[in-house]
Amino acid sequence: MEKKSGLRQMFGELMNTDSSVNGSAARELSNDDYNAAANDSNGSDNKIYQLKTDVRPCAVLTEDVVINGSLHSKNDVVMAGRVNGNVDVEGKLTVRGKIEGDIVAGEIRMEGARVMGKMTCKGRLDIDVNSVSVGNIEAEELILDGKVQGDALVKGETSIRSQALLMGDLDTGSVSIDRGATFMGKIKTKTSENLSQAFNDFK
Image (cartoon, rainbow, N blue to C red):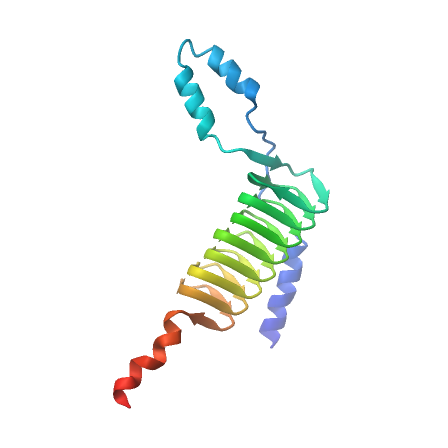
């Protein structure tokens, strides 16, 4: 009980710590950028236009940005600031700041991030070693290097790396746990549902 209480206290301290990965200011390439490049290409328009179609739109929120309310985007988002509200991103969400609210995204990458709320990811959820999440998780695939307090429902594969900490139950298609990882909870996999049938021949 003392160990569990200490871990919960640690989560509280980590959630109040600033992100250890500093997001840098960036911007999306504009049409003027492409036009200028096209004018300088001397007949290489095909390459320029091909480049433009390959570039995926991305909104960037720098460290000084604070949003009090919901955030929705149809494109990719890099968030290094703070959001006090729910986040809905149809593309890839890269979090380098803090979010207090529920997240729904096509793909989520946490880089030195702090998230307090439920995360629902339609693709891969990647939580790096400097990130902390407090809340339940639903994802197609989970790669955990950081710290999570909450239950995780993963349809596909879950990979718990050596420095990871998971406090909660895990329901997943399959799981691998590296030496050194800390896990407190119950594990249920698709294969475990059929384990009872493995001993039918001995009845």
